[in-house]
Image (cartoon, rainbow, N blue to C red; front, side):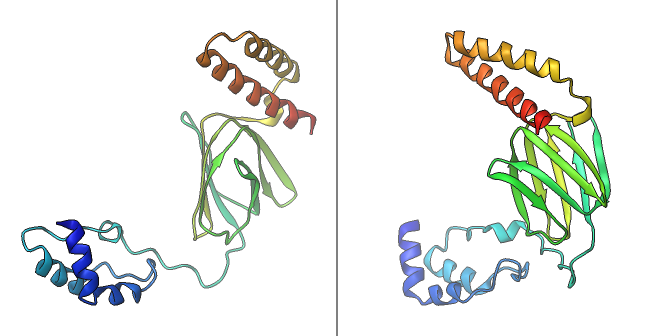
Length: 200
């Protein structure tokens, strides 16, 4: 039935209407009556499907000028490190590489990898080591950064990092199962990133 519905809808000329629709940011929250009427002709016993726009609220309007500051919310499962802090820039360790975030950055979702996150406020730079997480960059110059674990860089003991790296490297070499290998590999990656952060 659905295969026939799509074929009949495309024949009736509704396809041309779909192609001329506005961008998702401009779509009103009302139901497309032309589509519903066409659907009822083809499949009168079925409710029209709901699209993602049926569940979304219209996006808030974007400011006409770029703000001078970036608002950062940096959250851990057990604490809120920064809440509504206005800064000049944040550099995050995304899986795609180091990512500098300035006010007016394009909206993005980025996965974090083990590495240094630095928060720049004037000449003051605060550095954190983050293990993993996500960064949500919004159009209104707000950055929500959620990390599984984070430690200010000055609180990391270099001797403990070296000890942990040696321990996980040995575990990786002697791992017998896939689970042991995966756990050891994660330990090596995190301790290597901490070691690089401290030496660089």
